[in-house]
Image (cartoon, rainbow over all chains, first blue to last red; front, top):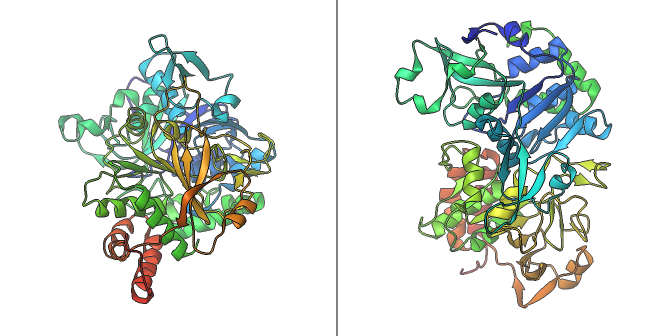
Length: 281
Length: 256
């Protein structure tokens, strides 16, 4: 593995993702969606199998598409849904037929597990959860210990989450591979926790963003970034903040198609299978 | 829900928020988002609000850690939790119906509630679905987050009220029971008992849930709806229209 950030195309990004990898993916909720949809379609085209999704901390279209595409063995998330477009039907159907392992979770526990990995410590305590069945069904992974300090109250600890890959779409990358993430601090968190970080991005920044002190607080440093790929409109059909809005008509097409596996497969045939559709939109 | 019912929810939430300093509203929550902005106007702007997902009403400078850290150290003093299934101990189920994991119906998941509901005081539960024995159950099929905790457990937060399509309940944390606080227009205690899966107390001063005041309707139409349309455009248009309709046609409106 190279010590400098590699600039590549979408195939170069895909070469970094193997069957069975644990992949951290971001929520679409935020100033910009941060969801690498071009890369997601490429994963479906490549036919990756047995992926373990860690949603940071929830997912919508991306997780549903990867599940429908047969790429996913397990998922943990605070929630999986298409928001105003309704339930995530591929997620629900695979949960019911038992072909998808759903590791019941909650957003702050995923954040805490990634934080432990980021800090290089084996676990992280967090408040809440006691009395929840989420904790009960995750008892093999999550523990309740006594606070070693007064008042010695019970507290939940969760183990570090070490994804193989963090994958997201960012607004801007400079010549060195530094990534501007604004206030999406969860992107920095997943990059620091993961073994490899793969970033697709909207536009290039000429120069070194670390020399602009107004940008520095919103940066993910290139030393945490494995490979980047320039993918304009790479979050489509999700929104990307001020740059482009959610494609409402297309989201409705997806939500309707994905009600059944046959509908989903037809959707993939039309919008995902041919890489050329990326260029044609 | 009808626009009139949405307005009743918003007015009720705003009254419940009186005196609060910093309510938190989660994602996918249009009625609470309108209610906190309304409550802030009614409080003469002496209130901070955080509406997740809103670029205009969230001053979190980090999108995930800061939210849960802030909740855990007591920054927020009110919170809304929508429930798929709720029982008489205020346990909330957001995971699904049936014996887990053999669910008959799967929902999206527990979100952040296992932490937020335990850490943020003055949580308001609301049920958008019709108030029936299917939603208000004797015992939830899955506890996403628990209504009450053992005395040893650090728990500054928890529920104070629940708003449904038929009524408003108060929650008595010490007793771990709901008490009926007001009935929506047209409802009776008998109807409520036959449509509720758990036993509850009835407040001595039981009255009718008041609708929005003239001031609330004007603030909603003129300030809140134009503001929240950046997040919920269709909802804002519908509520603004209904507020205007009620202002023009209502025979009498509550004074407070």
